[in-house]
Length: 400
Image (cartoon, rainbow, N blue to C red; front, side, top):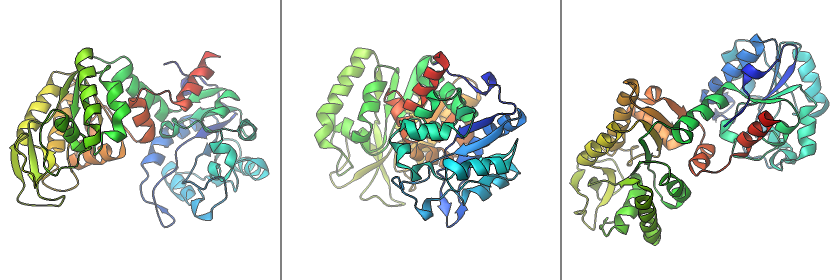
């Protein structure tokens, strides 16, 4: 993929519109998790050092094209100021006179935060007229919101056609990591796909079997694949209606030379709850009144061994119910193996998705992976092999 970065821009004395993702968790009027702000800061600082004025744009929540007081970005200003260590001027609207006045008030080299883009229906409609109103506020456009790149919205798509456009540092890091994972990876490539349901990741699985060498399936979705192979899974979470689909994916994987790895033993219990009485059984010996809640220790060893022989790993979804002990052990074992191999320089490891990030944090290895994406839907759609409108717009801008 070819796109321009901040290194390709001349921004001294210019106003740069930066599309970030400031849709951050709040506790009352306080930001409770600054991760997304932290990831945006390098782009802001880089532009300021180059002599630009920075205008930040973002969505927040789902106000559906109307002004909703509880979804204002104003409370985010305080956290931005604290992390940047400088004043941030807040604009009461994201277009028009109040936006222009706020940018003027911030002055050359200043930072302005515009009000929630989604207060205008034109944002989610990818409306060219609304994009032109945004474009009128600046000279250059930078998209640093990979997490919103799967949306064809005015601030991620139409706007990129109206101004010189480039990827911010976070977007650049995401795209380079994703290219290293599935675009032009070092082989063999392994993918770990976990989580509850095959139905939610059907397109991911269909795409991956033709692109990776080893596909490790865990979580509830592994139960559907086990059922498809004639294995009884007791009262485990399972989508019996998708057993035939799972069989078709297995056939496609075999034709593509992709090995599908499933658990060979399981950690079981009668219900989804913390327990000191979890039992480990062979995968074909799960009693009818028990549920599979994690891969067993033998599976953890076998699946970890598969990672040892791979050079690239893409991970989305936990291996079991990692939120409750002792059913975190399979996820933790694989995460620690991947982290060790990454630190040793023998594995490029890319992970993404909310549950995955939480699982890696739980295992204490989130900082040891090559790259961990904070994007949810965009990461999943990329794993499905879909074109992301926000990325396509940057590629088109680079080609012009």
